[in-house]
Every structure is written in structure tokens, then in C-alpha cells.
Amino acid sequence: MRMPLWLVAISFVAATAEAQSVVEWSSERRLSKDDFKGRVPAGAPNASLSWLNIDASWECEAGELLGSARATFDPARSWWRTAQGNIWQGAGERTSGVSRTHVDARRSLVQRDMQLLEHEQLHFDLTELAVRRIRKRFVDLKGACDDPDGRDELRHAISEIDRKLQEEQARYDRETSHGTNPVAQDQWKLRIRKQLEQP
Image (tube, rainbow, N blue to C red; front, side):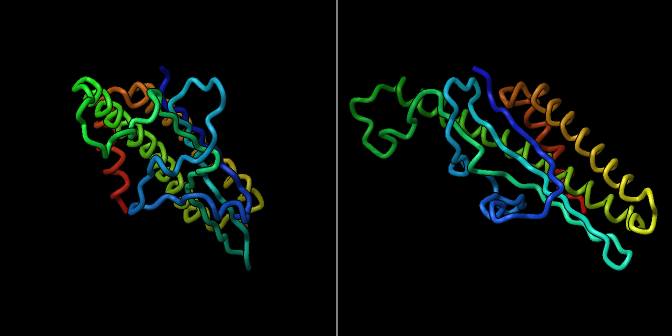
């Protein structure tokens, strides 16, 4: 079975009413299975899909560049499928009459779900790191409003950050085998968490 799929889109539009339903990245709030509210497409080969977005906008006000960027997760477009049916069925019930193999299989599914959820969260974390690079470019290019080529330079810088993010997301999936290689997954987790702790 193929594992997760992720999408990162970068948009340069002002926030809309629809954006109120998205989950903005936060160090205090981690993704949960309940965040994946989209309908699973018929015949989808993946275990999940995370719809990630970078909302970036800027304007010139009195010759000064004012920019903002945020990483978001869209629950309505993100979906989650448990391949083996409802793993929670009977979880609160007595286990009499349930074989040890069945209990172990259920536990294994829960562990795989936790592993997949951690993998999806790290995709979201990578998106946040890209947002921080965009914010830094806003500071570095604060004179873009006075320079005739400044806005083009800013668009180019953000496009380059997006290109690198897409490459990093693909490398993350490749090196971790979509989160199924626990050693590689732990290495990425440590590296990403360390980067997120930096100011």
C-alpha cells in the first residue's frame, strides 16, 4: 500500500472567509486524525492526504514593505483512511472472545496510525520552516517598494523558497519511505524539531 500524499500550495492572495476553517501551524497544536475531514476519493491508493498551503501576501504602504506569511492545513481537503477498517471497534469493550492475534493486530494498526500522523505533522512542520524563510525575505527585502525591480525580486525569492520546499518534501518522503522507515523518520524529526526551536 502506498502511504501518505501531501500537497503544498503557495498562494499570494489575501485571506478569505474560507481560510477561517483552516488550521494554522502552531507549536502548541499538533495535527490529529480528527483534523482530516475530507472525503476519501474512490480508488485512492494512499493512506492519507494532507492539503498544506502557504498564504503569503505583501503590500507597499508609504514606501514600506508590509508582508505576512503563514502555513496552513486544510481539513476539508485533507483525508485519512484506515486500511483495515475501524480499529477502534471494541476498544472499550471486554476482550473476552477476542483472540490475542486480533488485539495485537488492532494495536499494530494504532501504532501505524500514530506513525503516519507523525509523518504528516512533519510535512506541516517543513511547510512552517518555509514560511519562516519567506518572512525573513520580507525583512531582507524591506526596500523592495523603492526599487523598480524589488517586487519581481520578492516574487522570485518566494518562488525559489517554494521550489526548495517541494524538493525537501519529496526528499523527506523518499528517505523515510513515506514514514515507514522509523530510523530515518526519527532522524528527520530531530532535525526538523531542532530547526523549529531556532529563533
